[in-house]
Structure formats: structure tokens, C-alpha cells
Image (cartoon, rainbow, N blue to C red):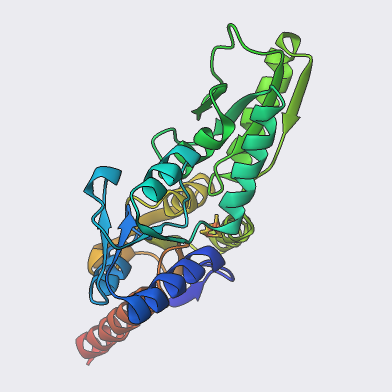
Length: 291
Ligand code: F3S
């Protein structure tokens, strides 16, 4: 059995940066609360808890002390609310998310309707909508355009599927253009997502089974799994080595590995090691049976 890793996968620049910032702050200044999990990965969140870094789900739960804004960013209203509470703030918003927020703010101020291609319930998207102002919405399918400003600005959640975003924007241009005097499209998908997706597709075209490693609630991991599935290869989204059902490997000889932007190297290495061990044991059993 051959095991092949995607040429680009795992921890992205933004996640590494966020973890480094909060770890350093926790060592120097003590316990930190993050607004939502710092990354969508249980192993990382559990490890950070050991440094006194814990997550709260809502602004109201924030205690006195230091609060970290995650790489997904927050809306200006939430930021103002935190600041008004006399909390010390560490902002780990990923620069790619900052860029999307700035685009949304610019468009909103210029009088465009800001349409974000993304999951309206995701914290990054909620934050970006906040920067856009009142004339903004988010969706994953082309919405009903009834009473809207005549100018439309489209941007994308940083971790969305590139191909789907292109289809979404093309559909609006081809069927809804008559409603607008101007449509502007901004590709705000981040570099890491772009590279991970291209590498996942390249891998999916070579192997006959893919394991996509990452948290079940990690949007970018789910998109990698979707890309591999759409490429026609048998795909399993697992969180770690414990998620492998070895019966899945029956009849598959070339196994691909890719991982989301919040999946640490240790988790990837554990999966690869588990597959190698299984391979070795299976070979030994076949050898013993022949003797
Ligand atoms: Fe930033 Fe993209 Fe990672 S938005 S946090 S570099 S997945």
C-alpha cells in the first residue's frame, strides 16, 4: 500500500500566527479567554487549555482579564463591546480575513449591497457582514434580489471552495445582471485555501482513497473533502487516527492524505503512522498465511 501526502496541507499561516500570539501572551501575562475556539480542532484546543487558554461562546461570558479575538475576526460592534468592558484585547484576526473585512467596509460605505458567498452562521462571515454595514447578506445559493441598491459587491468567505464561488458569481452575472448598474467581484479566498484545494485535487486524481484530516466543524476541511469526493475518489473526513475504520482500506492500494488549515502536524503524522502500521501488519498476516 502506498501512502501519499498532498503537496500542501495542514496548518496555515493564519492559524500558526494566532496560536503563537496567544501562547506567547499566556506565558507572559497569564490566562486568556478566546471568543469561540481559537481553531476548529479539538486536539489544539485541548493543548491550549493546558496553557490556561480557554474559549467562551458568547461576549457576555467574558470575564475580566485578557481576551483573544480568533483568526476568524469579529464585527466592529463586537470589538467595541469588548473594548468597552475594560478587557485587554489580543487580536489574532488573520490578515486575509482583515482584507475581506476591509473590502466589505469599503463597498458598504460606497453604497453597494455587499453579498458574501459563505456560511451565514460562520463567525468569519458574521464578522465580515458587520464591517459591511446594514446593506449586506451572506448565502451559498443565488438569493432573490428584490429591493436592493443598484450596485452589488460580491466577495467570498476566505475558506470557501474556489470553483463553487466562481459558479456562484457567474450565475449572478448571467441571470441577474439586468438588476444592477454595476457588479464588482472580489476573490477574497485566502492563499492557504487556494493552495490546499489545488493540492487536494491533484492528489485526488492520483490515488484511490483519500483521508481528509481535520475537525468536523472546520469549514476548510469540509471543502477539501468535498473537492476530493467531487473528483470521484473515495473520501473519508476523519478527525484523527482513531477515526480510521480499517475495513475502508480493503481493495485500495494508493492512499492519499490531506488536512485542513487547523490540523496540526502531530495529528497528520499519527494518521500516517497508523496506516503504515496497518500495512505492515496486513503484509505479515498474508505472509504467515502463505507459510
Ligand atoms: Fe487565514 Fe486562510 Fe488560514 S484566512 S487563518 S490563512 S485558512
